[in-house]
Image (cartoon, rainbow, N blue to C red; front, side, top):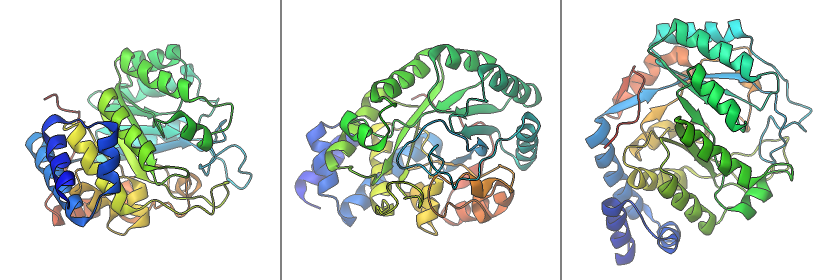
Length: 350
């Protein structure tokens, strides 16, 4: 690790901020020594706030029907090979009931932008969940909606909303999305969510097509300015039925490096070690935690549909990824010195 990298790491740990050019330098001059230094500082910061806690979220993938045609996504509307499904109100409640008995106190409803899920239908689902499990948190990840819609869902009881920004660079955004989607609208949605009062999450893919050190630095600067409550990043993994099927996947190495940087930018952020990390490496989830992450999201969806929610090739949804294997996940986290905590896992104010 050269002197400048060391100085930048120390500066980031102290000030939680770097210039765009400094982020670029940190990315382009990374090595194993720098990664270890960043991870050590990130873990220290996280332990001061959350100790050894790893929070679990029960992921319920409610629909793989989507009106959008994002070029990287396996459930894009143009994919005729996608076996579509949509969970009913009753099926969603059954998933939550099983999750609650397993110890989950946060449910994440995730889905494509499926027009069936109107405000009225989603509000009924949210109110039912809150009625049955009043002390549980409900996170939505249902894409771009109007400010009016976001407010209705919030008033119905939704606590958090995760909307990945995907990239903070407009030109890069336009290379990943069809012309009918707008970078400006994505950013507008994120700002509206925060304004309404949601615990708001953003995020991006690591190693996505056309990504550069510059675009990654812009992502880090955006996170620094936006100050999300949650931030979901994971390696890009191609899907066989998309225009990017031949592109290389992102790496565990760079993903973990960026997780450590994000922890130092936002010390109290809720930072998942994602399914994508676990997909490209058998111990990817553990490596993410050791880099500074503090959230895992096992799958509570019915086993009959898990394979159908395939955003990328070979997505894991069984084994320790399955919510039913919570004991296995606890053992895996315990083996690296962490404890699965079964509470809402809200972000702590510092």
